[in-house]
Length: 404
Image (cartoon, rainbow, N blue to C red; front, side):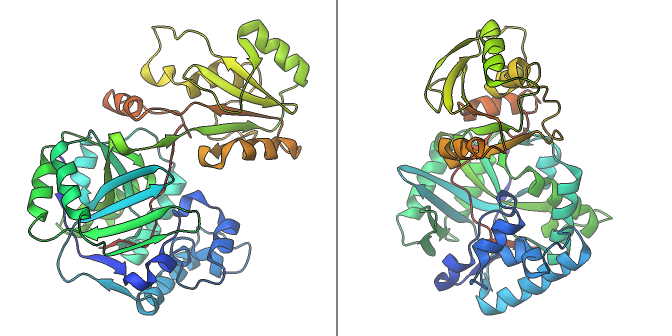
């Protein structure tokens, strides 16, 4: 079962929601966060990336940063203001980006189920990132950014969501990037039906937010060393049906050609794989678009050996096995400084810009992973390759917080 619980959300008053809402802490660096929050003292980036309010060069993982986060959080609660609901509630959160729409249920989900793989993972977490968010959560005593979950669509849940969204939302706005956000509070009368409907869902899948979930589990041990029961037993998340989830590719750029010239790299590729002139984005699985020396090429990765595991069958895995490792000498993509990653939302123009700048030598544009592929790998207990999925649109931090 998937245990869903209402909670007493801390949220902005409707008039302040647009100014408070901020992109997730981990999709921007310090400089980008500082720029986004410039001139907006209500931006939740002052809480999620508090180093932006400290001297340039401040290590974002030191205690003064977490102290500043707590101070900024307290000030935001007064200045926005943020209000705490009188009764525990569930919420419905709708995202619209262009012609795409997805509607999820926001609430608290069980860390016991997270521990026992009812809430399934598809990637490894990094200890340093876990440390950072755990310290942040403990100092604030709040989960301030929701985990993005998905599940196999259920008609019963879809029908309940439709009943909620027939009413006027609690608040709604269009962010600077054009994404529309709207949040409804579920009535007390409908809440038991939502809880029962999720109890029939056999598994939930973390789409985005592995470090947030892992940090909530670690913080629970801090708050309840003797296993006392409390708000720390759950984590804040929004669960979207798989039929609505949109995954964009997570593309690759490489700093140099590993001793090759553009001509010799193309020749080596053609000895192994079919290479043709092609568009900036592949049109199907099994193809990769490569930007090299001012031109786009389509590289066909060939047939998939039956012996490969599900995660090894992914285009991102085969790109590494067939090209990045043997031809460009890229090792572990988690640690190799010669490779970087560009979210698919930035488009081919960003890949071209970075290669044309001369700082990077070649770019690879991938076909996106499917949600069902992600679920199959999670069901098998496998792990997706690092940086293989980019979920878009993104949830906003600061709209719903869970106090511990």
